Image 1 (cartoon, one colour):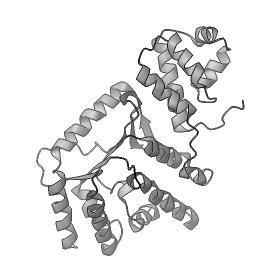
Image 2 (cartoon, helix red, strand yellow; image 1 turned 30 degrees about the vertical axis):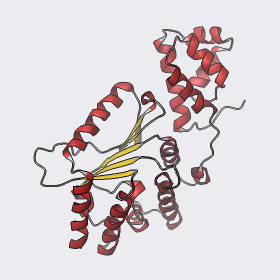
Image 3 (spheres, rainbow, N blue to C red; image 1 turned 180 degrees about the vertical axis):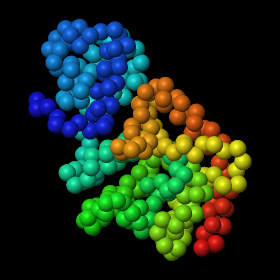
Length: 283
């Protein structure tokens, strides 16, 4: 089997989880290879995401690592055997890999939660809003790439549509609602879009107003994607070098707590809709 030249974030996460299981069992790659009857190089390649692993071998590895969490193991098996080629694949080689990884993460998420302070969350953006965001980039993007990024962002909305949409909760600060990323008409259209989306049963939009006292959580921006089991949850945060994917159990626990704190500080969905409606009327 040929080695992968560029594993996806999902393939790398599977590799990381298998390495964590081996290390928790106190085994070296050589010892794991002996138990499986393969070379240590093969174990290293699996743990680097350079090659896949069959369901049979994955279950055998988990047994050798004394992992008794059957639900977690079966979730890993589902990842290892998944052959989905989603809509994002049409952008491979056209857009940076993180764009594809984010779309794949959202596609497989059991739920999505997002906290934003300066921008409307991507899945809730209108086309004009997204175009204004990408159009402000320095250096300027070539027109063709800008339009590709806008089209990709619009296609991400598929998670909120169809017969089985993903439960989605967005907490947005008033600053993001008031900043006119585009012109006045585009801003009004974006707020109207938020009201329309939040009317769906599976979409919850909450607002943090400027008037809220004692709120020091402005550094809490995140996207939280639920996995098939909590151990496979993922947090996405913006970083100077691009989006950072966070998946260690300790950090996931901290971000769950952080989200609950921000959620508790926000307006409830009904008051949030009233708040956005008032802002829309001001424009």
